[in-house]
Amino acid sequence: MDNIHVIIIINYIVVALMAAYVIVNERRLQETHDRTVQYIDGVVKNMTMNMNNEIRRISNEQISKKVSFLDIYIEDRRNPSGEYIIYQREHAVRVYCSFEGDYGFTFISRKSAEATIDVNALYSTRDFAKIRVLHPTGWQTEALVENLLSFQNLSKLFFAMNSHENYKGPSAANSGLHPYLFLGFLPIELAKNQNSQGYRVKDMDFQYPNCDGNPNSYITFFFNPKLSSPGETGSTNIFMTRWITSSLAIDYPKYMDSSFYMDWEMHMGGCGGFLTSSALNTKASLGLPFGKFLDLSSLPKLPGSSSSNPHTGPRTTLH
Image 1 (cartoon, rainbow, N blue to C red):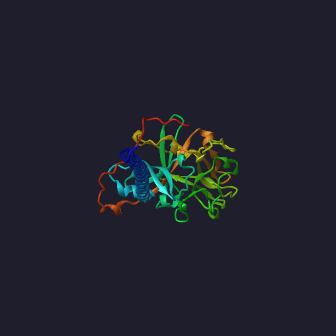
Image 2: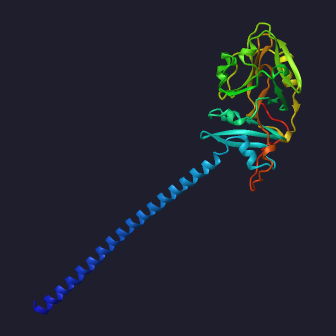
Image 3: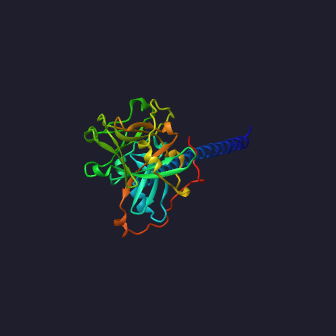
């Protein structure tokens, strides 16, 4: 083989090696490009997730400012009565807000049984409360309750969640229905006396003689998340049911969902009576009073807010 053929062969080999080098480098460049694209994609996704989390956190902080009925009123005073979600201690609490002139009332849903509820943030006066009643037919009524006129300068009503400090509390036989809201009329110090006691509805006093000085003076409203039956039922009498029989019909557009109505237990003295919702096949809901709103008249209306009142008809089924 002469020198020319050797040179030609060497040239072919050089060209082949160069082509192979180019191919290998192109593959390496492609792999580097792919890794770079994956890295950038991961960074972008991570930044997007962090940004969304921050937006959600800020949004939740803004929403959590609605911790009470008053916050909702300030945001929307056009037609605000209805169902809302408020946030307390990072817990969502489902409430029904009823705005009625200078005062309003907050009713808590049984669906919030697992929430940590700050009842103190939901009322501004203890002079009165509203109780709504769900009858077996689905009819809904309500009554404003107070302490007897003769006790109003001695004691305010008492509202609490899973507490009855200074008051006789609900029967241990019905502990399976907890958690509960508590409405106390007279504390033990006043209720232990053997005198006339009771409650006031529609500007009328309903009394009984506390013949044995047993200091029960309350109505308890049970969330009863396990749908348990009461261990103690009680029995009815005229005095114990006057807050029900004296209650007034609610216009059906203002009816609450049945989830706002609870099993209840009422105990007055020893001679007043002991009664639960099971004896009457009724449910009830405690309305915590909030107001007055007259001092808010100078606040501007906030645009773009709305309220919901998702009622479907004039009857609500007990369940």
